[in-house]
Length: 409
Image (cartoon, rainbow, N blue to C red):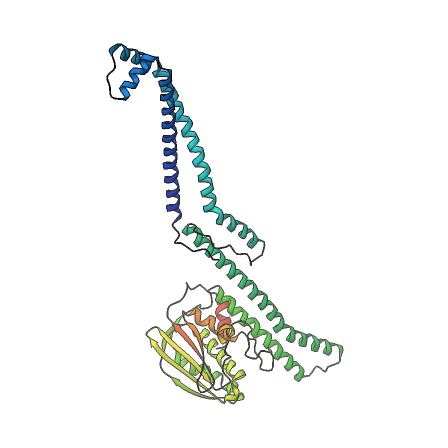
């Protein structure tokens, strides 16, 4: 049965409450102990009084007035016991104060351990995390301090994130090896065969090998783009551009590719001004065209739209008549190396990094990538862009500028 959760208090409040309770408990225990000992001393003194003094003491207790001689004898006897009795009372205060302090210290240690027990579990879990075990989790503390509960929750979220990153890194490493193995094997086998004289060194074979090298180059460039996005260095230089004219330029550049895939292009390009890195936007739009040529060529048509949503936000849409996205596209559509074909066949080409790159570019421009299936069939991919950036831009050198200008522009 799950224990009920109660609102947790701040650690400072809990500490103040514990200290206050311990002080009150210590004072109360000391008072009770001294009061008991004083009663005990009083009873002992009463029992040790002479008969006449005892009678006078009893009469005073009953609010009666004893005779003068008995009263004088009682006062003399009490005066003789004043100093030793005061010393005993003072010693009792010290003894009971120490005993109550010791008892409160034991109780305080117990309460402190209850408060810090989640921290001990956190330390143990952190050691496991340090050793590479990202599956460690800390149970949610029961009625603990608010800061401790928040720390445990944050730690568990961090461990989950690290575990997810490790799984993704493992998958990406396997995918990179998968993407590079085939072209490298072809290159190595073909070059070795030409050196051994098995294959002639003619232009056709060299042209085929060049295609494999270009495929490797695309993988490396896409991985580089994603790495720049992680370091927030993807958007290097913004300038005021009209997204509609930029898309027209990309359509003109991609015309041979689109014609080879027998895709008829329709456009509805409205003026859409935004401050953006134009080479990166061209790279994103061209990646969507390449994706449509591979997976939606059977639809026979491609539609491009641009729209000014607000003064600092635009949308670039690419719509096709292909098979559309699978139902679980939200889970896998922008995972690196993901392809629409479950078999990961190379029949359609590509690296499986296209949509990941496009999303990275959209995020770098303060926007996002949106996927949808058209009701009448086909897919729609929308690039949302804004003038605001998620982080500060970084400087760049001449080599970086040249590499961007000679890319997909």
